[in-house]
Image 1: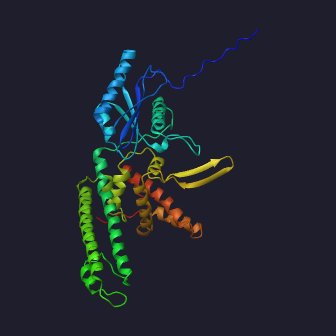
Image 2: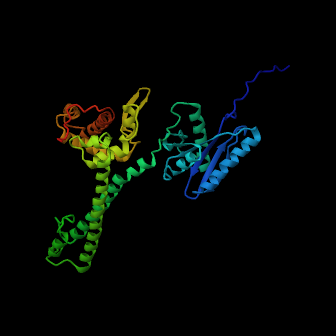
Image 3: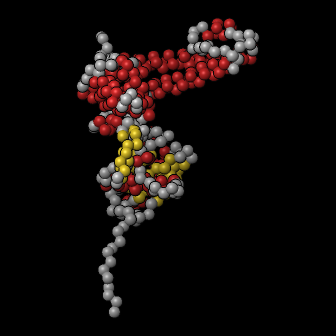
Length: 386
């Protein structure tokens, strides 16, 4: 006689007693894939697609999901939507919020994925992973993913000034290098295309074998001058917008406070303010992590080493801070941060300056954050004379 063995009831893969309709959006240039999990719908995730940027079709699909859930349960459930931060920006997130829909934007790098060397990846798989991450997030599981804090349209627009200037500077460098390269292949060195007398000096140039510049080469260089002069005018206009933005703000804003510190000019103050210090941070770890300057340990068993900074944060803010750290050592030689840097380099025998300057950049960011939020002046720092 066979003995009956009590078998535990198999747990459900996905919770079906949901209090909302969970939806993920997988966005692309051609289609938007909608993956949803509705109450009393079992474990099946429904998938539908609409044309890219078809907001009316998206909202119509949401209405259909609500109606189906109401027909099955007799209740009206709210919608909770998640999407990845990417090229589409935050306009879809704002549209959903204006329609009264709870919307979340997640950092895609924070979602756990398979660590197999060769793994399947499709929009359907990614959509299901987003729904699972949203479910875990709403259950309150710690560190299941990192939700992005969407900036306001004004905060997003404020960044354009400093970002545009950086693009224009890079374009100017390209054209200057092109002019120098064209002249160098003719044996001409030491010519500076950014000087105001660039065109007059061009007429005086001769090749390395004492010939005048060829006509077509001179015409090409002149066209490069036209582009350079246009870029110079655009850079001046952008810088004027930046300065006006800083001046019109009240004295309590971080940008104006940063301008009071010796060694920080309008460009650095604008980038530090627009890219990072306008946000709210709970502690210094969040500040360093946002700039990608947080340490990345690798510890397992007897293995314990440091991999360097994470570089997972705002790259513009991180680059600016490292540049500012080098300038800080020059312009603030008696500050506590500079003395710490010099003592650390001296302890290493003058080596590892680049590594130490990154550590100084992290300390400097935390110190500037305390200065603009709590008014704590950096020890030993010199302020500009009024």
